[in-house]
Image (cartoon, rainbow, N blue to C red; front, top):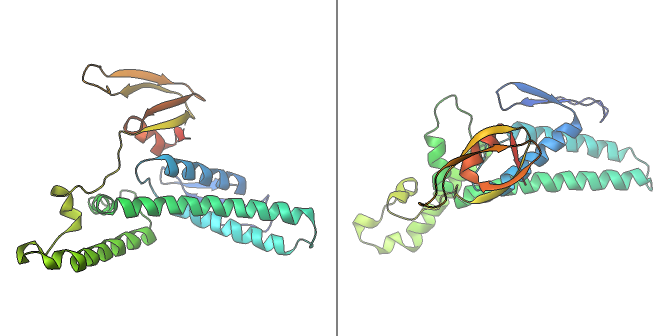
Length: 232
């Protein structure tokens, strides 16, 4: 849900927050929020929770900026600056959505199975459009697999359920043990770090606000979801 007023500086937007409540943001806060989501999605090995409401707000803001641009006199320096900012925001938005689609394509059995097992009331990791895309990608993959391979196999091997194929095949899943760079936005104490080898023991670390670290993603995944840390 979003609402824009006529002037860029006075505009405000309302979107669902991480706690289920609506957040009121200025246009600059909205764009900053999108950039944070973009970086997290870009550097996270797994598909994160969708930000469809905020994407819609950004698209509305872009429409508003385009309308403002039409009112600027030709040759005015403001037009060039305004156009560059619009192009920058479009790039961030496109890159964010592209990163999500690439993960859906790569991990579609895992993503759909996770969505299928989601408890009613839990936040969906896929937007309705992404869910439709994932199901269509699954159907097209199964059709292609049957056309080029399965029809040449014995009758008892000519059917396959891609969502259960992981039990027999090596279906790609996100590597949560990969390492990521992060910046701490709020101090966190006693973060449990799992050992990297059998010779090591688990230990705890304190993360100071503003500090930067290289850590295993699995360890800090909940902190990424809550917004306490920012992937960089």
